[in-house]
Image 1 (cartoon, rainbow, N blue to C red):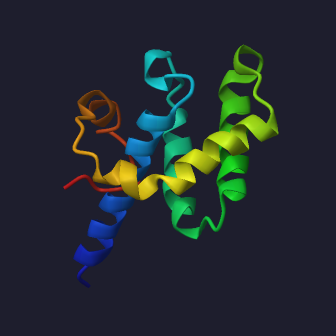
Image 2 (image 1 turned 180 degrees about the vertical axis):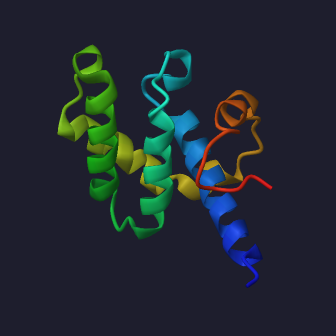
Length: 118
């Protein structure tokens, strides 16, 4: 079975997610020493993004991840997370069209399991 169209779709979604994570990230996550499990959260976002119907849904996911990994360090309210997610949701196409280098981000996730990078 030929998976090329699916692989291309997955790569596009992955690229879009990594760009919006870098562009909108309110905490500059790459500068923090993150647990290896963070890549699992990226995998989760990649899988659910095509099914997101609103910024509120995305906000719930962002809020959960922020609370799980940063809790008291970055006490964000649900409203703050939804505001961030609203910006992400409304600007995905714009961010995806940016011709910006995300080399450090790509290097970090080259070992990412779940989406082929070829």
